[in-house]
Length: 308
Image 1 (tube, helix red, strand yellow):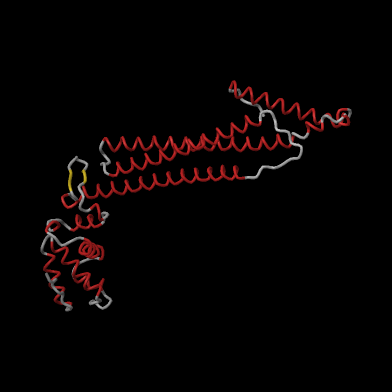
Image 2: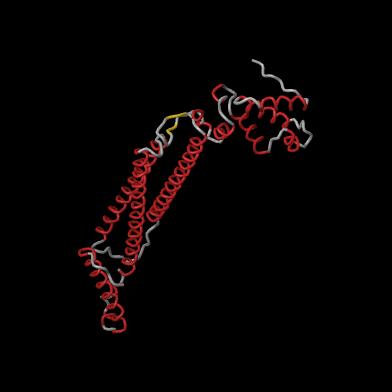
């Protein structure tokens, strides 16, 4: 079906627009179509605003009419709607314009069936939904970034070449510490996998919530579930951070043990045993290490606070 060609005669267009102003529904599309034609072809010779005054139209109304004619089909579905309702529909995301939505009164309607007040409420709901979705995505991205940093630090620590010290004697508890490090790494992996599962659950809940009306009971339950998931995710990140700090401290402690180990050989020297100036710092180190070991043992067994 061929579309009616519009005239390039300004007087004819003015007459047609004034005629359509007296017709409800379809007139909005036809007026907007003609306004757009005048503006795009510069038929008012650069004085589009002044020309609108001749039609008793302001810029805001003219822009609304042109937007409606550009974005909505000129069909019987919209012919019984006023300009405010039509304009509100054009400001909705395109996929939402034909979907059914639940109103505050519990009714299920498509946008062309809603009142102006209901359309404004729907627009507000969609905006709030998008903001919440954006916030959840930001939290998820931050959690993933923290996990990635912790994982990178752990990998760097594992890849670092150990220092080699001559005449090093492996401490009695070296294998025990090595096994503890292995268990710590396994625990970090478990925390990471748990965080991934929480991320997956959050995405699933977000998907379900997008199909649920804001004011329904299920919507509130999903919101509560997502908040609980985020709390668990944050707790998991804190535990991961704490375990990483302990891991770094243990690695540092191993280095200290390797550096102190040569003293075990020097202490057998008669020159050291008979030299008070040499013995005193060694005995101080022995005292400090013994005191620290006792405090750590007490902390692990009883949970007492270690005074620094």
